[in-house]
Length: 558
Image 1: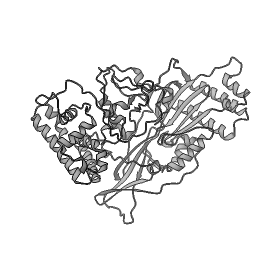
Image 2 (image 1 turned 45 degrees about the vertical axis):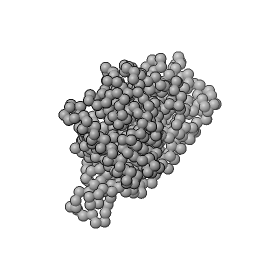
Image 3 (image 1 turned 30 degrees about the horizontal axis):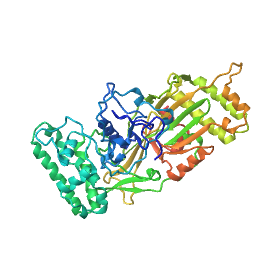
Image 4 (image 1 turned 90 degrees about the vertical axis):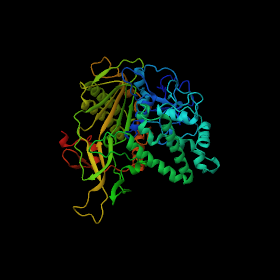
């Protein structure tokens, strides 16, 4: 695990941990990927922040590992450290605007890698004033403390030894009879079963006093006895499979589904390397839905423009005068449906989100498109005047600057852009769609509806101008201090800009003079070529290569 970035601090109320005073502590970003939205919402709910302006985590908001069981987070929904549960007892503090800001170094950052489920359960003190009348409040049993925590959605204040004693004393488990793998994960299994008890569906009725507290607690205990007994008697693998099925059923039963009629109301989480992402396909055989992998298309060479507008590609451009980050943030919505199926979703808004970064004492400035264009002309002329820059590198620099200028012109915010500001915008006002299905030899017209794999693709760009500090010289001809330095210098480090690329899907960054080539090599080795897409307006099919070359535009979008 790499050390935390400069400025990392925990946003939990009462927690003072930061990268400066808590060495060895990890600081996790809030989940942002679409299929982790449920986990993000649970994190926010668990933290229970109080802010009169309605607090939401910003790109720089972090939760330190001290708030997770085992001092590590997990992305597995069965794990007790799927969400933060360990909190200080301090009174909530008012969050500040700094909690929702991002440092310059964090702007191009990605997200902390997944961690394995931790086994150590740290002991914490229980919040006061949340007790059920009529049941033990002095020296409560472990079972009651667990039950009480789940009823009130509080942190679980028991140690690992106490959980083991609950398993042996209350649930009558013989640890010597458990498989070795199950003994290692016993505490995780216990908490996972507690979390999916179907009785939590009636928690509101219970708190309203509609049935006896003793009966509700007894049924919880009987459920745990039954589940752990069946787990021990069966094999560990089959028990875990049954637990996963129960989580699916429990989620369907308890969670209100906000469904769009175009989409299925169930989520399927598929973990696979990126090379498989564009090569999986679904179909139905009888009453079953099957998933297979097809070969996919071979890569063709990409121009600089195509690479910059290719999904998951980010570029950072930095010189003494200017620094900006341009991230290809294309949104993919993937789902199963009966084919043929088309989406007519449209959006008239080009800009989706704007966020101001920390300025660290620097004034936020706005620069017009015309001024930036004139500066970049002078800058390119300076580069061409030196023999230290080859033709291919000049073409790469020119293309990156041209795409940046086109972004500024396209978003059309008073024909200008401000420093320390992140702008997320759509490259196309209309999404594209891709439908895939397995073709069978015995397919006939009029057969029953076929299940297919559908993708709605909305090309987006996230752009941030971190700084622009060109100093114009008082001369009859437009010139700048830095561009004149380039003309007079023979030092490559002074002349050449710093250009780095990153695959935002794999979180791999490539720097150096050959960063473009190594980025493309990564795409060829770790990803598959994007397949054809269809416009949701004109219904015509397009090659992604051609779309990326013209910024995902075609005639009907004009």
